[in-house]
Length: 218
Image (cartoon, rainbow, N blue to C red; front, side, top):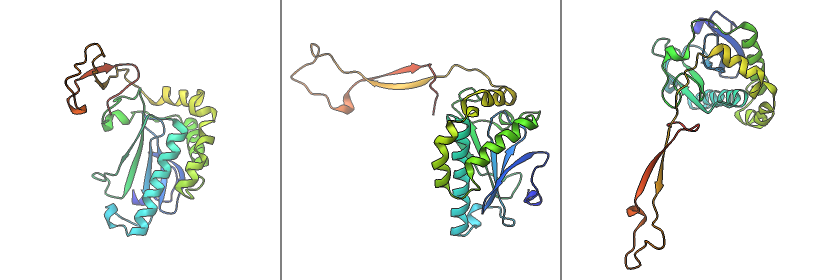
């Protein structure tokens, strides 16, 4: 990964932009639209703990800025951030958007479920990279991306044909029934209440209700 820094697109990644501390790429083979990787660009570092305080602050601010841009552009239900480095021991962070219709909604997702055997069409990737680049604005600061969030959501590709095309191409999603467990206090009716006794909130009986209308297990 060190040798790829500063060289733009390659067989695995499409460049989005370069910040002061990291380079941002879109993954070519992904079932999750907007899956990005942020790579530390200043020499070889394996562990984030090896950064000095200023470097660490700058790097993580850029990672979060990318997360905000991905969230704004693709409108996922959740963002995952993974800094591993077991196979490639150079500091990089996977910025992974999660969707209700992704292969593992509501839970951890395996690498083989994230990656697709075939690359996303080049035109789709560069369309997405351009949109993210506009939102990031050169990674000036995380606050700049926050200010652009509403503008990004108003674009047609956030919820219109652009995102639909990307997801149809990139995701072999598995439709699964989703459940959400809700704890509901059971309060006795006035006619059933015993005025001679009192019940603390901790003693109030509760029931668990399963809901399967768009909920998911957090």
